[in-house]
Structure formats: structure tokens, C-alpha cells
Length: 398
Image (cartoon, rainbow, N blue to C red; front, side):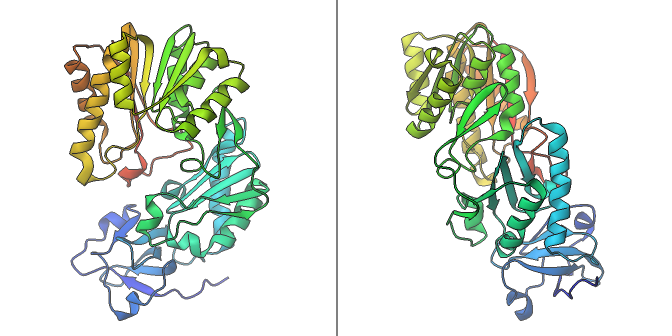
């Protein structure tokens, strides 16, 4: 089958195409010739990208209203970007997850790293939650939903339109049920021996953070018989895994009452309600209050939101991470463990580690870094895109 003729967009003469040829997945607005013809392309249009000498570089999804003006879809310019193409990409992603996980609870698609730029899909057994954070995915949403159902066999597909990324693409924030029937309430999700309650319709992101799975597991190995403090707990990520591994007790702290309620429901389903407590409040205030109370824990984990979501926010974010470490360290009993996490791609591992170590030192504590963790393999890293390697987890023994 001959692919349809795609419109052509071209790099500016002063733009070196080597990075794109070597795998860079994004082309920015200051790198593309923007004449009247290209400006008329509708958001999500598939186009042929050429260098200044008219040599083809690949097929891209175009959004003239975005700073990321073109996202690389396919290097083979003879291919048609259609439903069959989506099925092939999804099949490749699905095959790897099926090998890695015993149960169908995982991130099915991690955007550029899985060859579907700007698209995140999390699977919860018979339900898939799609975040179509790029204009092309919104334009091809019907085909994407159909392809997801064909490849995975799920009955229900939900659209989560929250988050900053869609706004940057000029997309709306209207979530929807795209296929099947929406769940009537929070969904139980088994992971690391724990049970988490995921609110797929009203929760953060797609309802649960699968990326921390291996870090939950590592922390759980430290938690047998331990007193555990889970700061910025969301639905109890670290604390419920710790209880499943035999923690003596766990305290989950978060600013969201709905998230803490889901955490408590998870603990109850696990039969661990009597060992589980929650405390709602600003994390910094609660850590100061716990220190004033003389509280001590064998394992303390801090998993805050992205304090450095951009380069402009990096210095302020690093100071916030240092403050987290400084306030958390005194709460760790001698010989205990402190886990510090960051989901800020702008703060790389070296900068984050320096901020954490400095904060621990300013609290008058010290100890070796025993483990560095990252996102699980269902969140693959695109080697040419630093943003896809956002998650870092540092574990110290104090």
C-alpha cells in the first residue's frame, strides 16, 4: 500500500540535522521554516520533515501552536501513519509488559520511549486510561482507542485530560469515557504485595503512580518490623508496601484528604488497618511538628511533587529538596533509613543528590548512600530525551 502524500516541512538552513538523524524526537519552533503554508497546517497533521537540503528525516506530527512544533513519529518515510501503524506500536509495547508483569497492572505506553510521542497509557486490568498529551493523538483518538482495545482486550478506555502538558499543546481539559463503562468507584490494584485504591476518574494523573513500583519494593525490604513514615504519601505508595512486607506500623502524611482516604481503604483491604495511621497537613509543617513531638521512625520516605518542573524553577526546586532532607533526617532513628525522591526532570541526579546530602548534613546527620533507584521498566527511558528519565530515588542509612 502506498502511503498518502504528506505535506512537507523543512528545517531552517542554520539548523544542523545531525541530532534528529541520531534519534532526537523533538523539533522546536525556532528550528522549522514557518511560512504561510506550514502555518496553515492543522494541529496533529502528519508531515514529512526534510533538512534544508530537502533530504528526508522522517514523518512527524505537527503542532504549529506548540514550542515542540514537530514530534518524530516514524523514521521510515514510506510508512502510513494509520490505525495499523498504531496497532504495531502498541503490540510492541504490550509484548514487553506481558513478559515483565504477572498481572495486567502497568504503564502500557510511556510516550516517546514507546514510539507514541506525547501519549501515556496506564492499564488497570480491564481498563486502560489514556492521556493524549499531543495534538496528533487527539486527532487520531478514535483509532487509538480501537487499537488499544484490539491489542490488550480491555473493555473500558478512559481519557484523562488533566495536567500541564495538554495546555502547552493547546488542548482542552475535558476527560471522558471513550469506550465501555466507567468504574463506579476506586479500583483495587495489587502491587508489591499491597493493595492500592486507584481513583481512575478523579485522582491525580491516571489514578496511580506505577513508576515507583521498584522503589516501593526496595523500601519494603528495609521495613520488616520497622516504624515507617511516608511523607507526601498520595494513596500510600511506600507505606502500604511497607505494611505488606511486615512493618510494625506506618504513618502516611499528605495534603489531600481524598488521597489519604484511599490509602486507608487500601490498608483495610490488606487487613492492616490497625497498623496504619494518616495525618493530613502541609508536609513541611508536619515534619517540624513530628520533630517537636520527639517522633522517631526506622524508615522515612519523602516522595514530593515536582519542585523543579522546568529549568527556570530548578534553583528554587533544589532548595525545596534540600529543605525536605533537612527536616526529614532528624526523624530517622539511629541506624535507620531515609529515602528521598524527585520526579523533576530539570533537576538531574547529580544536582538532586547534592541537594539531599547537603540537607542531611545541615540537620547534623550523615551516612552512606546505599541505593539509587529509578522508574520501573514499564517507564522506559528515551536515550535522546532527558525528560523521560525524570524519577530518582536515593536511599541513605543514617
